[in-house]
Image 1 (cartoon, rainbow, N blue to C red):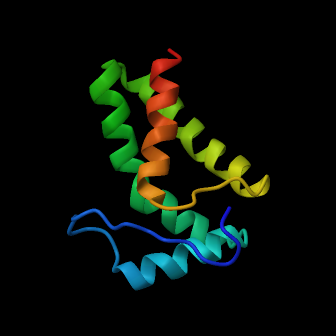
Image 2 (cartoon, one colour):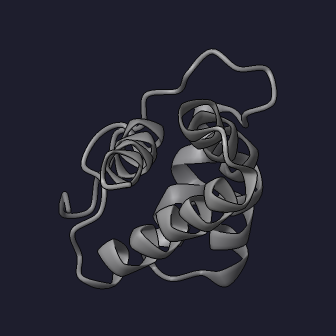
Length: 102
């Protein structure tokens, strides 16, 4: 993890929060703020599920793998090995790796 500063590259999506708000949200998540972690889940869960589902075509398995993405996110934050640049890219990389492992 970067000490104190993180950079988030916002994807051009109308339903995401502003870059400033998202940076603040991500910094709160690094401090294990439960509300921030919940907001991150709410922002990304549908997108991550859709990404996984499009690749495996099995809704129950996609739901399980989506949950695993967020568990891995929490584990990485706990171990201080979370994202260093693009948060969304990091989440999608976790999802991609889980799909490949299937």
